[in-house]
Length: 233
Image 1 (cartoon, rainbow, N blue to C red):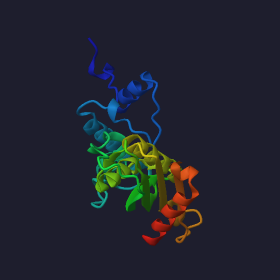
Image 2: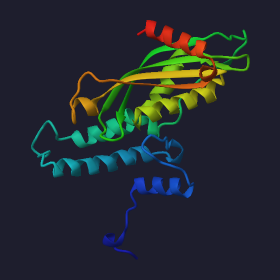
Image 3: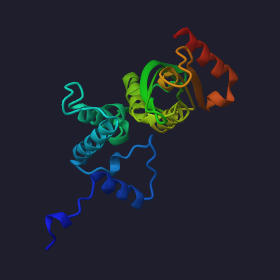
Image 4: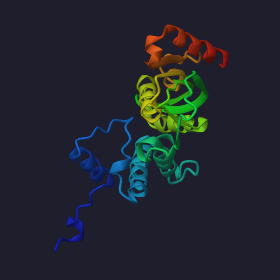
């Protein structure tokens, strides 16, 4: 029999990582890994992260034992990361009801601006911005409710992201869900890694776009979308 000192405890993060590696799947910062979590493991992961975050605070020479402001900070930060700021990594894709395009709608539809929040994967500083989505459906497209566009965008953004990859992930997800003739996504965001650190520029924003299908081929459609988007800024 092994003594208590000989018992090796395997961290829950190591168990989850082993499943992902065994499945030969990627687990970058902006990937979703919900399918590899078993019931109860998110709570265990929260406790593990809280313990390690407490170590970070100790290394920052913060007296969490006697400082009432930081006494439970490690656990609060762990909970914030796992269930809110980075919740899109650990929660399954939100359920979205899809409706058939019964009326064969084929005109441009625009949703936005949608408020989006994330954290950059380089410094974990906030990204705060707005998103516009343009959809050109066809008779075979699925239609989803307006609020569901925001819900799907939030699921993707609630991970450590860089804006260029985030907007592509949102476009890929909507193309799969809606199956339109064309899709356009534009994001405008403030990056606090520029506001808080480095150049400390409080005015610069990043704007980028992804165009799919008809929006790539039809300059007039692209122009119409961008014009209508600008009128709703």
